[in-house]
Figure 1 (cartoon, rainbow, N blue to C red):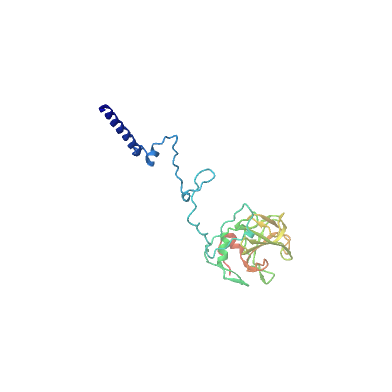
Figure 2: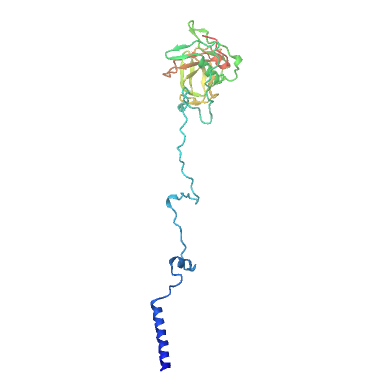
Length: 281
């Protein structure tokens, strides 16, 4: 009995201890989510990919490079011309390939300058002589030097009228050229002037008048843009010029606001072509 009782007591304790384990399980290791994620193998773990902020992405051009940011400041305003600067008129611009010089605004010496003359609204003063002198106008007859010129502007012609021009003597057929860049405004045949040319300057302020031509240059026509030094015609004796005295009658007039080629105020070409101050009223 004693041995049996001892066996039964040990058996009871063994069963009781096993049933307690069933009701009080030991917590499993690495059971927390944080530690479990750290102990996952690289093969089974998924890498965390950060999601970029779409509002901070820079635009990308076709080459894969980040495009430069758009300018945050507006472009500077266009520069305006100062008041009083004459505006270039493209309708009477010189031919392509030739750029006329910029006109100077400085006014030369007014010593011995002519008094202001008027014809309608147009008027002439020392300013006009200074502007034209600064353009370096060519002598209109090829081969003639400034020392060969004669001032016949104030000579009386026809008994009552002032000549208002200069005569440049040269052999018949000598080329006559444009003294300035401009527009052939009118080709006209008159009794006194014979074959004539009215050449407007590029700003339609002044008109250069050629008379007594023998014939025009080939291709010359009204509305043609000409370059400085371009041949316009040839010296002759048409009109009322003496047959044995071929020469070019050359005038410069300042146009009025109506821009009529036959009406304007005469300027003396002599001091302009010689770059001398005018000495007449």
